[in-house]
Length: 459
Image (tube, rainbow, N blue to C red; front, side, top):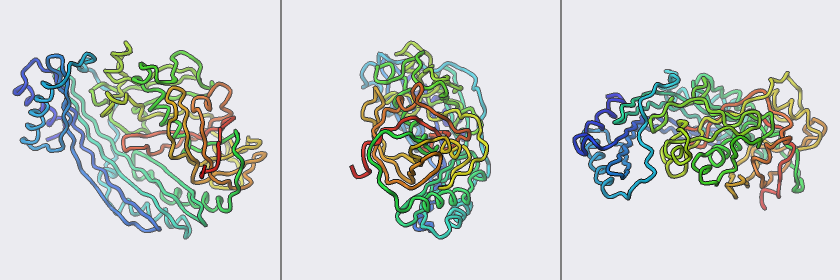
């Protein structure tokens, strides 16, 4: 059976067990996730899982319950329905029930690369071998993964949807004399992931990071590479443009206000040809391009059906499993790039022409490859603390002059992108693997007027 067949079978079981008055929605996801990991420049793990997850939501007599199973046999589906029917009878009244998604057309088609969907360990190992060889003898570690997702949705209001997608991603580091360099890339097709390019980039950064000096804590002008900008997008999406947090006044977002520099436009668009995902959410709502920030003005936040009802708005198609608890998330956030840059020569770590052009315009500041271990201190202002890693360099008069030890920082992310704070945006965005398999952040480099480094990595 197809995933849509399974969804229809569950709805038939609900009608027999709960009656025609019960509202029901079923999501069926089949995910084939395959991972090749390497460390000490050797592959040490190949793993794969093929899992079908069925989620059933019932609303009856003013009460709502949700059940999940990975057992798709007739007995497994029958058990899911029976458990969920029992749960809805014991659930408290649900005054925020938003109702089911009505029938609606999908705005885009699925994007699947057949070779990626069928890729095995040998195809991923080729990328790992290329990465290791290109590192020129440096110690390397990381992973190469492929993902195929087939999803379907059906509800008792008559909405049905189905779609599939593929993703390939590689994330690796090279180490030289205790210094690490990183390179990451995500794409729809494994053929677009070039291990040699990534390995050479990571190795160049590692070699350029040895014998770093320590700079005093202060506010520095910065160029953030796309790997670092992806963290900004992730936290802005999770905490800032979250419709539930916005309705609860726990978000910085103020609709219609100029909160960002006029050069900043942020969209969420799974329908873009470079993105990963299916064109509907777990509530069956069709996804569309959503402009979150337009030329510095905050225009929208993401909604699922429940947060939209609370806000008096419409769902934007951003329901994900668990969004009723933590809110709807933009998992395909994209910072639109600036104008493409002509090739620029910069002595130092391997950077693309876009990053090099931004560095060339810096009087004195810091080039940062990556941010990690970021934690939100205050969701309302989006004050974030974290660390740099995988390459930091001092820049003077447009030239990279020396590597720098890692910093700890505490920074209000919206403030860093605020009016007048963005000096430049790179012209070459990078598609980067997200914090989980369904997330894809697309980011160019950023040249910012100020970033608050509060100390060294040790304190």
